[in-house]
Image 1 (cartoon, rainbow, N blue to C red):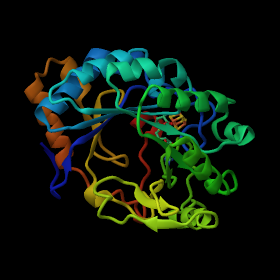
Image 2 (image 1 turned 120 degrees about the vertical axis):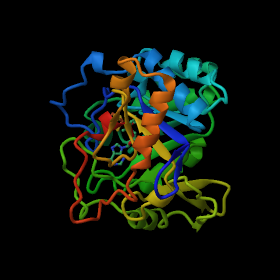
Image 3 (image 1 turned 90 degrees about the horizontal axis):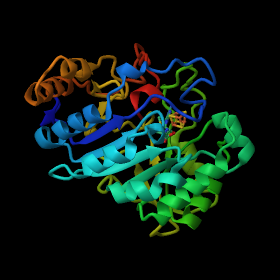
Image 4 (image 1 turned 180 degrees about the horizontal axis):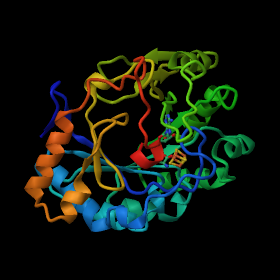
Length: 329
Ligand code: SAM
Ligand code: SF4
């Protein structure tokens, strides 16, 4: 098992399949100038599947989420999903995606065994979409999400990040749209993970502000921590339910005490936290001939050293040197 010294057990694996992306969300990537990882440093499809297999068979991982960068840019995605769906015990398989191009592959992904999709969408206005992502792809995103629903990938959750002065007035509009389409919307507080290091605690849109904005239009009833478990979203019933909305208050109400995640970067480095400053190199060990038992042991050691919390509010906090796109969100 992947247990740390605080007794937390990691059962949820996030696998970054690429650091590349076809959007440039301002809270994640600079518009230009971010160098991609060299191809030979990125795990091959077989290497990804081997590490996922070790996590599932030997380390107690039960959920695997593919992310990036943009995981749909990974050519072998459908085959990787299919191989992971054949593992015993079969893990739950999900994908976090910006949904650009999802319309083309949603059916194949569902057939391969993908269970769920989280799409990311911060605005419904084409001009704002372009300001936020530096690309004009809103229609692609909407088509991709619709195709995922058609393909039976359920539930479809939508992640939205609000930025002050850009889209912080859009929370009620986004929720009305999500309810209309049967998507589960969750707002995520912006975290200091952008490659440009432009995050500012003082101007970040807080969970409290997001809820206040939603409550100008909707009545919200908290579902409370009982149902929250280790899921990072705190959930509210909208208009008495059954519709829901979530808020992931990673900064103002951290959930590190119940974190159950372990992460693998596209280069095959284990990270025990999004904000970790150290990584453990499984790719190097694997390419030097380490067997499954040795790789599992290294993964356990990497997780044992997980810090108690992300420490964003500590005076000595240092942003990780890798941006979110290279860690895997
Ligand atoms: N490209 C895919 C996507 O956008 O869904 C997967 C990777 S992306 C890094 C995963 C999630 O992280 C997205 O929902 C995105 O909005 C979120 N994200 C990226 N940078 C963030 C930041 N600085 N703070 C909070 N969430 C962030
Ligand atoms: Fe790309 Fe996702 Fe980062 Fe946006 S949040 S730039 S879609 S990796």
